Image (cartoon, rainbow, N blue to C red):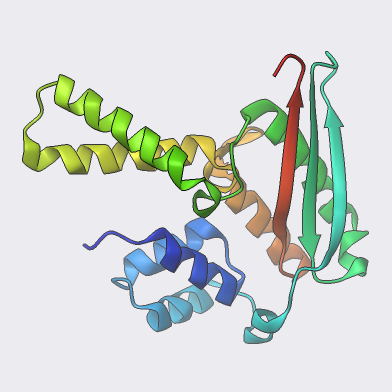
Length: 198
């Protein structure tokens, strides 16, 4: 099976409004065929209606969280399509949960596409040096490095991190659940995490 590119996952996510992991699974199940992946998501009920595609998440809230120690604070912008949804309890609870998650898990970016290229290349170089140090054969080194990079993204990007309140799911899954309940596109706009001394 061919490797699914992050850019393809992002495009499918923007098109369908489905969660990132759902989009990745759909592309894996359909051999990377975008149209078939859209159908797969519809059958599974993970994709929003086609009319959602043209919608933009321009409403929302900015939520804050200050840890009880007063050493860590977070501001997160969570977007949706309408002010009505932004005022719902489910949406505001999601925003609070995300702010708390960011305080605890310290992600470096919203999604892997948002990680600066210089950081990705630095990590790749470190992983390659580690693999060479272990004396791994050249033909498996690239696969090992790609696997380590995948794990790096899973641990350090918000949407791919295991959700701190339920490590059985990712943050993207948690957002998808609320999106399905409210019937609107929901997206994390940006966040900033402050820590005393950093």
